Amino acid sequence: MKVQDIAQLLDQLAPLDIAADFDNTGLLVGDQEASVEKILVAHDALPEVILEAKQLGCSLIVAFHPIIFKGLTHINPDNYVGKAVTLAIEHNIAIYSMHTALDQVIHGVNAPLGEALGLQERAVLAPTGIHPIHGSIGFGQIGTMPKALSEIDFLAFVKRQLGTPALKHSELTHRTIRRVAVLGGSGASAIEAAINSGADALVTGDLKYHDYFKAEGKILLIDAGHYETEQFTKKLLVDFLKKKIPNFAIILSDTITNPIKYY
Image (cartoon, rainbow, N blue to C red; front, side):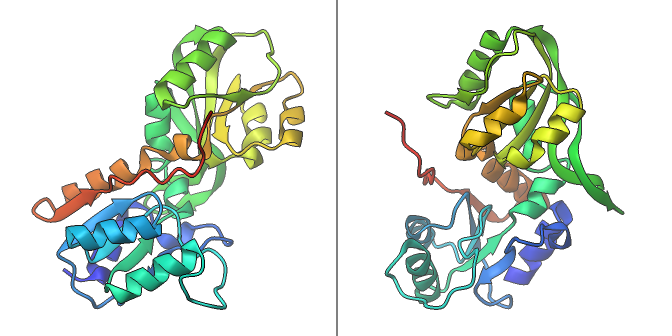
């Protein structure tokens, strides 16, 4: 198969034309006509992931995050982006990114996150439009817990299910948690949508100091970590590709790319 053949399959999962305007998705490094015998699926195409692909004989990396996000004025190994791109070119490894295209489909990033938290009857939290094939698209999902939990029990549940060492959260509302919104990655933009949708809690990442004030006693905001809320994404991609091309070598990266450490 060629790189462009894999790209066409991935477009069935999450078409790139629904990616956010600010994003950088698709084939970021490499030739679409290049042959592919093995694929490495990773969360971030960091230099160590490029070296992992080289060691495994993979000529294509399908990554969730784009290693090139803003325009490059120099390509050299002086920083992690330049080093990753330089290594990929040196070893003829193509890099393909999904990012906000996969964020917006109902079966994308937020589906396994919602499943990990046991949410039922999930729907799009912040719709951005209607796709002719994928239906309602948008950021985040909202669903219902099988049974209501106290806020303390829910915090413990989230921490356990996502395997994060620590959670940050807004002031407790002293209400039970039943209706829950989720948005993998950076989700401060969905706070208003979560409140308007009647969510008791929003589980996301990258909340800043002033974001917590927006709770205003109406919702429990939980920052469970950017990586932690997106951690199921690369397995989702592996499972999809294995279903589409079952007799092909598709490898789940062993590299943990979360840059945040806990003490």
